[in-house]
Image 1 (cartoon, rainbow, N blue to C red):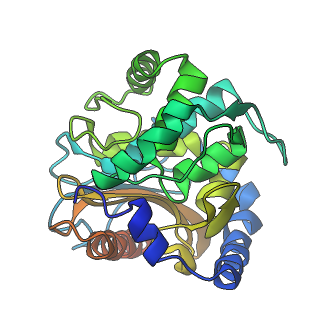
Image 2 (cartoon, rainbow, N blue to C red; image 1 turned 135 degrees about the vertical axis):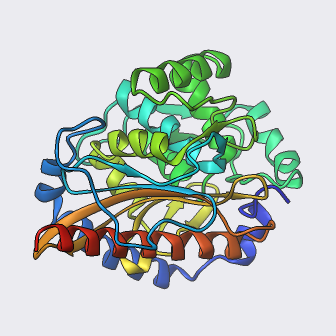
Length: 318
């Protein structure tokens, strides 16, 4: 199965509402307690700080990775070759949505009405192994709810709905995705669909770090990817597949047999005696098509990467 995040699997693995609410509360504390620090560090791609250094053994032994500490310059590991990114593609979809239609505070943004055709495709997409979120014809979803459905349970159908809502058509939105990638200096990235289900959507960890940092400039994005679960009108309560959420690593997952386990993340760390925000991407972790195993491998790689970056920064300042 190309994606392990299908509607049926999500139903089997759904967490109780009380647990989801507790995880959400715990996870929102750390990222937003350090909001001022984070905003000061998000200088964006190509910033002029000193380059992040890693202690020995920090880069994953397979796949690829990139990381930046604080306002420094990003560091990219070996093997930065274009590879499938699975649902990491949804970071660009969210970024373009928020660029065109920014959300502030508790604003809901624009509203769409689900069409009969959009509702009818869900069952077939789930049978293909796609990650989908249940919708019904006539259901009204706000921009905020669409972004939640895109980034938390990783709905491929939601990515396509946003593409039409924001770009006017999926083809036009895809052109905008690739234009935005070029403008951000993502020279090794090609988007062929807005969800990442198509293995022709390829990128590198260094490129994905660029767009992830840009998306993080939007408070709504940071809040959503820090959320453990959310309740949607028809789908009900859906949960986040990020294996490190409870450990304070907010972000976006991606996984399938072509991409392996992928995770774009940010977390707080103490390096050189100072609090820093570590922002990173790992790709191509694990093997096979078991979602839990792939994402667990990505989570372990992310933790090792952060620890090595913190150690490298501490050594640099001694």
